[in-house]
Image (cartoon, helix red, strand yellow):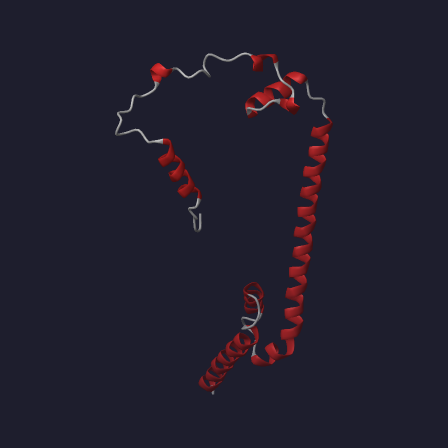
Length: 159
């Protein structure tokens, strides 16, 4: 009698697993995992009776988690916007603007600095520092232009 009850229990567990798998096969992975966890020890009768209720509770929890995540994301965006607005209201000195523009290598708002009129000696090309190429190593202008045109037509795939 005990063997028969044990065998019936194993058969019911096997049927319950099969039933559960057939019901969750079309669900998204996360929902399917949650359903497996919650109905792991359930019988076929319990699965048939409680499947919809449990599925609705799982979906409800997912929606709540999404709302919390959405709210936290919205709060983060608002915090960033507020921080930017606070930073934007700070008075920036002319020296900071000039230093910032120098770092970016551009002139602020099209205004020229006094230094821009002067040519730095470091910017001048020193021809003595150039490497001398032999005639067979030099590339003529038309060949270089053709090569540049060809390079411009190269399409990179997946880069």
